[in-house]
Length: 259
Image 1 (cartoon, rainbow, N blue to C red):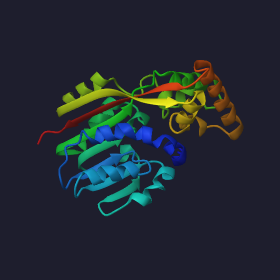
Image 2: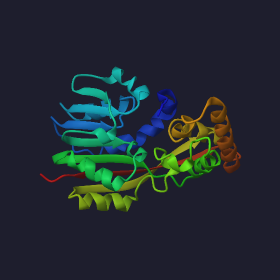
Image 3: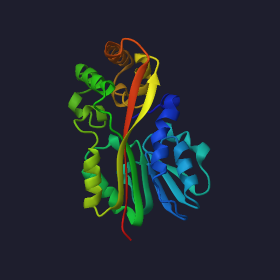
């Protein structure tokens, strides 16, 4: 999936706010082995590594475009690798993931899998979007249905969260799953981060950095332009004037494994 780090970073400050809240949930101890799942450009992974003294931190991401930016943040004790999250191997004191797991299906099985890579006393900390019921996503879903033939079949877009009925679990389900896995010190909450955009084109620019990516990468230039135009039309019908209040809603949860 070809990510555009510059497009993603257009709203970098707003997208980073949940990361800082997740970071504040970590139990800070020295000499931890840490992995950041879906590290992107590595800028926030550097902050994660800096927060945990003398940590050995690995950032992994499947996007070579994003990782190309990570060289600027590499330092002793911090490295980056191109790797799929499901290829995770080894044991870690902290498994951290900021806005990445929504791209993977079956979170019940995924959490169980990640838990096996958590060392005793280790901590799992995750943040995922919880706004797939927002009009920006519903209208994207409607547009994808309209272009299903061009997209190779709408139901085949398993990597696109907006095309799945339940791309993330509920807050309660995450907390219950962590308990079932034996987690302790469970914290789970949902938070809205207000984002004010000038008009409907602001919503389009926002989604270009994330939700639109798996759809546009399947289309040639002509159909890509047509898809965006139709989606934009729907957005302007929803928000015919500005400013637009975008409720950037996120789910954050963490738990520790007993000693």
